[in-house]
Image 1 (cartoon, one colour):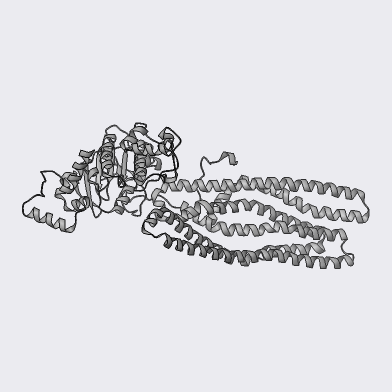
Image 2 (cartoon, rainbow, N blue to C red):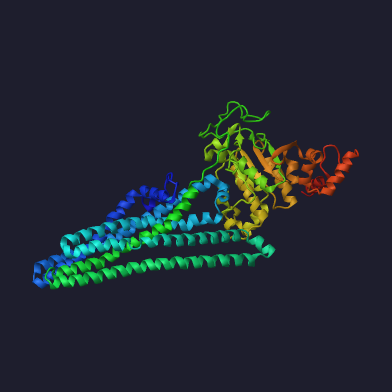
Length: 639
């Protein structure tokens, strides 16, 4: 795999059962790159290992006065130098390629898993941990993948040198062959403690990152309530804990590094002392002593890679564990799974049109028909605008996710059905094409307005029609004024649309949803941040543009409810009443309390008037309550 070939067409299905298994899976998928790096690493390290033998040969040639052997040693030293330079260059190139491609594979896997899980990801994993996995953890995993081939080459080189020294000069080679493994394993008892300290540091860093993410996300609210200093102090304390944990971790790694310097030094001292005695006794030549000494000196370089792989594994193992945890998350399936039966839809539900293909589980045809939730009894007839009143914003958000086939905690609940087809049984891309959900806080990515509205769609609704229906005229004017572009479609949006007001961002997000023109569109409080005049016009535009398409709006706004063709009132998670707004506001006290913000005293007065045989003042048959009706009439007159 070359960097120019990224991204992967298919990053594969990871083994996410544990961190080490995930690292092993990455290694298997990069076997070709690892073997290339190993080959160049062997050329580099064996070139280094050849130098002591040639230096010893050259020294002995000078002592013996042999010009031929001196020339031979010089030629081999030159070749070894070329091998060292070329091998080092290509080793670095291939190792970095392994690192980048491994990091890219992990990032693609995380992006794919995030797309599959949707909003449920941050409910199962903290937002700060997701950020840590997709940034710092990916880099640490790549570091281990990069260091693995260098370590393998260094280990083979150490083994070859030890065997070569034993054959070349047994009296000194045995000392080296025994001492080198001791040097390699001397730090192993310290690694568990170093790993624990590194894990503790990463845990503290993850908490600080999560706190920073939450603080930035709610910065505007914090400023409004004067809570900036409180959260700043909390982050200051968290960052100091990270600093203290990092210092403790660094101390342990400093001890390991010191041992890696001390023990080879002691080995050299003992080797030289023993070699001098052997030379004085005539058992070894000066050239052999120089060769063995130089070989041990140069072995310090490949031995450093033993320390590096230990550090890389210690840092990457918990990172891989966190990545595997995210990658192991799956979409939940309802209790009914993909089974279909005669009880799939309620009595009176409208099935998909006759002759129109319905997507089976695993099929690619987008189903059509009624949108039905068996858990609540909610039915949104095909081709109609249905408004849903929950009274609980959190419950409304969960219902919106369920209607879109997004995973939820209630895994034992039956799947939502579109045209009788369970959404949980559809392929992910088919389910997203069939039902689009816009939540309360939609995200606007940075870029031009044209790129924002360049989304997969049916092609039946153009950007201009969608912007007009969402009442974005003033938004377009604001974008042109703040940009050098004359065409508002070429105007640049800042990150998350921060240069726009909340209502303007909300309307652009609504326009983007309308452009997609899905079979079923679910909107969760799409006008909560706009004024009543604009809201009335949006309600009219939404109803006109979505004519013939299934649309579900979760709202408590009288203006949207009055335009809906069908209103469903939910109480305690179940359908309590179905009708139109002007009827429900009179006949359902609970509905009226949610929609008109009626107080307990007003509800009691209204109940007393009904018991006395009077209707609310100024109400005609089928009309809305005065509060809701006045809002509607005022809006319509001013609009």
